[in-house]
Length: 85
Image 1 (cartoon, one colour):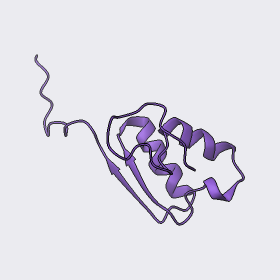
Image 2 (cartoon, helix red, strand yellow; image 1 turned 90 degrees about the vertical axis):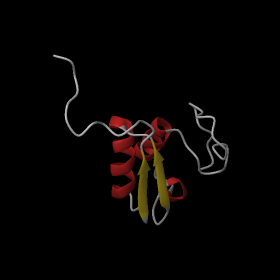
Image 3 (cartoon, rainbow, N blue to C red; image 1 turned 30 degrees about the vertical axis):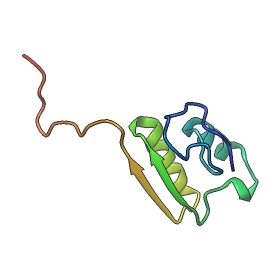
Image 4 (cartoon, one colour; image 1 turned 120 degrees about the vertical axis):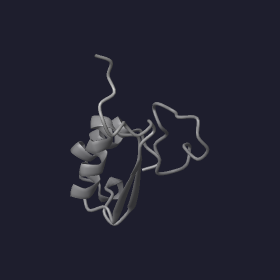
């Protein structure tokens, strides 16, 4: 692995080996046969949510990750819809 993030978050450590941008991560897994790039047996941390974050979680699980943890960057949505009428 060892790819830098395409969309930096400005957090310490994002330049470290093994940190990948979500879209690059998914694209790589869809095209690779190189076992070194697969998350088999690895601990995966997904930072962010939405469709792309969910794709990273599902893809990591399908490719044999030892564990997957996801952190959302946005505040938790309200329990009850709070849109003005």
